[in-house]
Length: 208
Image (cartoon, rainbow, N blue to C red; front, side, top):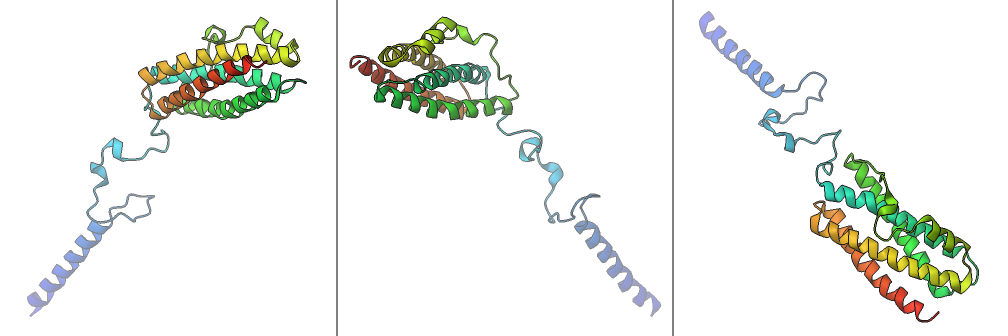
């Protein structure tokens, strides 16, 4: 009788211990909510989210980084030129409206590209930004600063056409050589927008 009583109790106790062991897979300090049958140890590195690394960090190449690093100061100068013309008196409304559009479009793009470079752990500064296509030199900027009225409008349009042409060249290089989908798309958008604005500015020059 004792043997028959002890064996079932031992089997129940053993089954209980096994069940507890199977369900208690949480490590010390964890919430203990792991589901049975899920083997987290078998997950590869690409399947486990990392709190310290952005998924976009590796999704770029040197062309993407160069595009953003060059286009940031290029855009910044276009914004500066636009702000100059907007501060002036007696500038034709059509030219002021164009300057406002350029400023409103390129300011946010500067922030976007700066964010990309930080995410990619890439430097944000160019060693010599004035050597890029379409960039104005100090003399050019001084002339625009001192010009007034229609003269300033004509100078702004002439300079901005060259400036846009340089940006289009850089953007087309990115569409060919870039890897990051967002950067390539921005480059395509820049080509479309600035080629359209070049035609607009060329037309405006004929009316002044």
